Image (cartoon, rainbow, N blue to C red; front, side, top):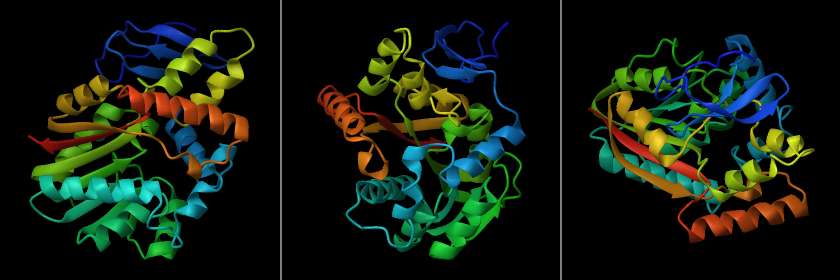
Length: 288
């Protein structure tokens, strides 16, 4: 492969290959961001998101969407995390008008409404929008976030497990800024590349014959992998003042995993918690 695309955060072309896989490279920039090169087309991104929603892209996620429909459990760790993040947004935002980008089943919008927000959503996948309407009566605009016809003036925008799927995360956050009211609040949830899960996979993935491990962790519909510093830098570049970057562990119960894989991941998550390197990041910021 020839020269790679610019880093989505710093714009430099000084990344080096972390892993080489058929048809793509996984690169690490000097700024700390890990990203995939080359990017798929917009049509390919849309097709992958539809396949992922149907559980056809990753076998371990097939049960996830069923768990977070109208039969969700209040004590589920994902539900509790959403409630915490909405409470944080409530302390940052002046009003209660919220837009959720990438709605999944519509659960986050539903929980926001229960917490007193005037909440709606936008999603690239028409199937996700239909499911959100069916499960929770959620109004969802269908379209690519950068181009969707949205009224703006939101007091809060949420992006849970979305920005890593974007072809242009800088433009993604810049669009969020234009749609927020002055002083509006942003929540972004993404995997944390600076965690034992990725550290272990990156070491083991250099061993010949372990490409399958790399492919399992660097999934087909994630195009960048953030650290706390690179996520905060991206938000500042987009015109936000970062209020907090929190860390939390993924909930393995939402995935279909073999006992061996589940046990290994659980051990890595426990190690991450012990050293403050949990597997997920939750960024909260205000429009400046």
